[in-house]
Amino acid sequence: MSRTRIKICGIRDEEALFAAADAGADAVGFVFHPQSKRFIDPDEAWELVGMLPPFVSSVGLFVNAQVEKFMSMEELCPTSFSQLHGTEKPDLVKQCGPGVIKGVRFDKATIGDELMKWDAIDEVDAILVDGSAGGEGQTFEWSDLASVKGKITKPLILAGGLTAENVGEAIRIVRPWGVDVSSGVEKAPGEKDRAMIEAFCRAVQKADLEIG
Image (cartoon, rainbow, N blue to C red; front, top):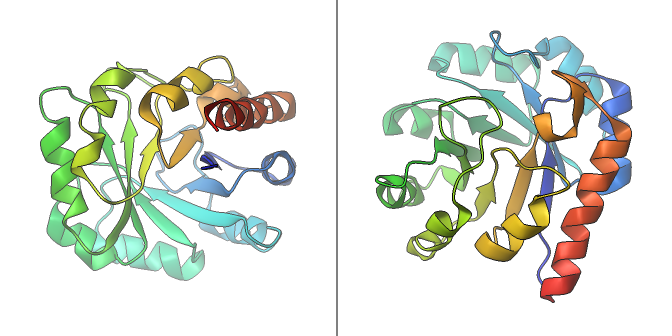
């Protein structure tokens, strides 16, 4: 039976960190984009990284950071993977690798080409497909992504408007390697809720069992 990996993004405190780990998350994300409501100082994030139990990965999220900024942040808080979630060019992505998760916004007209572009870059370890740029937590037609997923060989991570209520359907349609959630497990922007994290992880695990 295949298992869908789970990343809880936007972790900012110890309570949320352990809620994610205890619920079965495979990775936690720290947002290093200053304009985000979920921004965390790299020194604070590094303290949290030191608390992670074995086999739970850390991911640093950047948006259009220059290489120098990326390197300085990585020195302050080295993470298992780096998620580049902006409109970064291939040359910059290569300089930030290896261990890059490249985030892209879903657009039905271009998603196939986007997937193939990043799949061809060695420094990219996985591709994360998020909702459209129309707003935070936007879902999209998962069947449109499923129809082009076969174009790539690298792991596909699904994001964008996922919640405990809809992640099972998303998994059944797309069959992603992993799922990423942030606002879908929050009681307020930037405030994670333990019960919502637990419900999300249970929903993923249930979907995996039903798919078999």
